[in-house]
Image 1 (cartoon, rainbow, N blue to C red):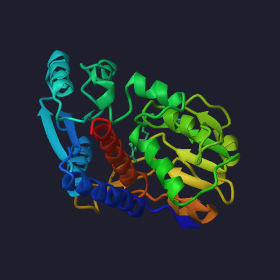
Image 2: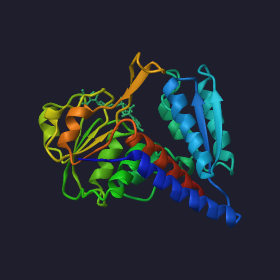
Image 3: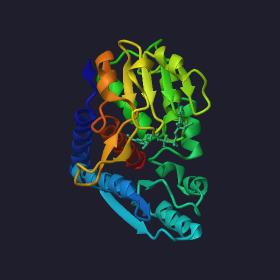
Length: 291
Ligand code: NAD
């Protein structure tokens, strides 16, 4: 069994970008500028946005963090997005999800200029991805593909099972794995909360992606010997032994599943760092399109 080390692959990707940014600076060209909007003060969202801003600094990108009150109106949020759309220095815009209940995710995502949609959630980006055209790919599934590529995992003709069908992880993951690319070319089954015989379906998977957000849901009896297991799940579980009062759990019962696998991602240190690396790649691309 080999661990798919997200920290290592993410660092390699970030180092590559750092070199490219240094080149842009040397040539007197524009460096990428990412704007992040954080509404309210959800603990996990604070952490995610904080790491994104920190990673921008590390690579040499400019970043702007806009903090808005939990109670802000949808109209004011849409206005803030419009200002960023119209700012020529801003290359990428992300609005950290989840948003408060009184704000429509859909309206917010649609308001972002598609050429700055570094999260890849805008319908234009999704449509292009489905058609296999160059575009921004949602960061988490993009990160998984980068990891499969880095470890030269042969995916062609393999049975891939994705648990979860959200617009940000499961659905785009299933599209990318089925695309006529390497990695890709899998025969994909997408499972969700209404899937029958989930255990039997998972057991057929050469590549199993767990993205449902249920800690330790995937157990050894669901996994085929030699499978590649990608654990996307991150759930904060109360843990009084930890200073923060919680620990992070994946969707896979790691200790019993890992010995069965050919490759597996740990949590933390697997898909999480790859998500940030993929976002940084998207931001570079957004800037490159203008440079
Ligand atoms: P979501 O709640 O939007 O979607 C969960 C999906 O799982 C749904 O499609 C649902 O149908 C399916 N599901 C739920 N229970 C199921 C069950 N018992 N059997 C089969 N399917 C079931 O969640 P999401 O936004 O896609 O995130 C999924 C997980 O991935 C969460 O733990 C989230 O924190 C994590 N996540 C991690 C990263 C990262 O960078 N590592 C990024 C995004 C999300």
